[in-house]
Length: 343
Image 1: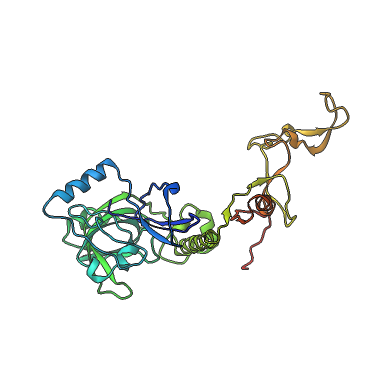
Image 2: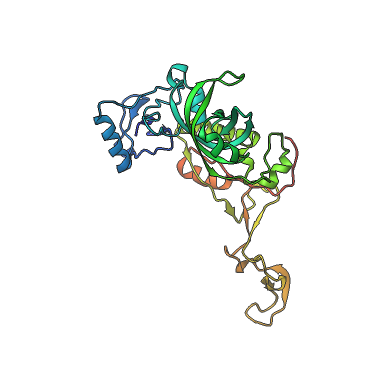
């Protein structure tokens, strides 16, 4: 409720959809028609019964929730995000990119992970990042606030928190706004051994904590760049009437013969004995007593033949191109080469 997606539809019914705050639109593409190259359609969101009821009751009251319009072109509005009472959660990036008139002195809810805590007795400064930008947002907790004694004293780097507060202009450098905390809840604790600290970590070290490395600036920035590039590539081909095809990830062919391949097999369970791996029989293959060769019998494998992770989608792409003309594929592909170069 309060979020309306904008969908750009071309005559070929290729569409891109922009929806904020994890809302989902139900669209019947067969009913979409347009007489112009790009017609902008606004489609109402499907809401849960509870959301619809709350929206109806809010609209029927004499005092309506304050509506805030975002200045960022990627977001149509921040309506209903700053409703009276418990405000809905807003992404840190949306807060920092909003204009002063739209966001200052407004109550918001922010959820994320604590990066740093600076306790200065009269005040506590906390940096929280929710993954929507690099730097996160600074929270300011008054030392006289109940939150200071009950929550801040128990905070540590890595904790996940939910915070309600008022957005104010920041007096510090390199930050536009900060959040004056009214209420804070710790949703998840972090142990003292939490490995990500306020310093630069090597990529070799981050490989040992794969479940936490997306929280670092380097890995999260890479993910954002990859996402942006992938969306641009998909948009480029979609606008030219290409069909996106998924070529097989597991294949029995070496395709271009371009490199070593990762083998996929079920013949070697984790606790299997080497003697239990089936081997090709010599001579009479129907005989139980036939001697065995040194070759693995992949006919007994899951796919009935030797199988690998594909090194290229070219063969599958050519098959589709001979049937659908303009196609493209986006991987993934795998090559079993131990390469650690910077190229």
